[in-house]
Image 1 (spheres, one colour):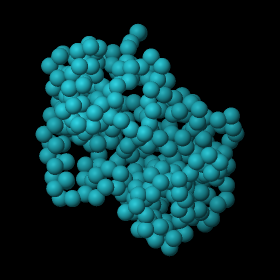
Image 2 (cartoon, one colour; image 1 turned 180 degrees about the vertical axis):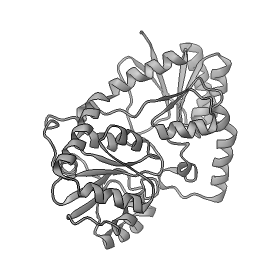
Image 3 (cartoon, rainbow, N blue to C red; image 1 turned 135 degrees about the horizontal axis):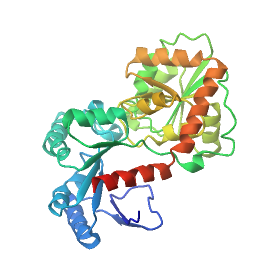
Length: 341
């Protein structure tokens, strides 16, 4: 099926240009962004508009124009319906009573009614689908997980990983204590009951207001904290990592989970982070509840696996990575658009 793609996005650090895709940066001001999108719709005459993320005015305030022009509408909540995500600000920013009230009011006034108007909702997981259906039981929902970058699957991907000693549980990404569930992992450490040596490593960019709190607790528990990890250091991280910890309280673009799977690293993930369901279904790790005892029990079980059991998880991770690249996501997304139209 032939199709044409136009992307309009807020400016950011990631270059998302692609061959054959028209890319338009949006102004930060919501009114200016709305006017630009109006012009784009008039010029391009799209059949389907796909809005990524709720609760962002620049993304959602122009939706009435989409409906008024008879354009089919698809929305991705992008983790913003998770109860734990609704309660906080993103990227470690301090929440205040006034901001919490505004976020709740915006969610009730715009997000919830919007889910009753769209032609299809894109969910990344069964958990997110459940969140959508609790708000609108009649919603048409397509579950399409995040994809895997094909270049992550390196030439050594066919080599079967071994559990190794010590068993290393790793996290790589922004060190946002609440969002990424790092406090829950630290709480779980004291409950580990495995007889095998265990090492826990957090690597990534710090959020200043969390840094001292995280480093203080981690130091007392023997958890290693590394800074931003790239190049040879990142390769070494993945080589040493036995399991990746993705126990997020709510989802974002959790790309490190996909990179772990592409390296054959089994994943311990929460449902709320939009990976727990997929990991459990494909036998490439474990789904855990967002509670320290559940995480500790799972980490103990994972550390005590026999080598054959571990290799089975690793092989399943690689199989999923090879099958679920972004090309496969694109095919599923186009099918979703066709059904919406």
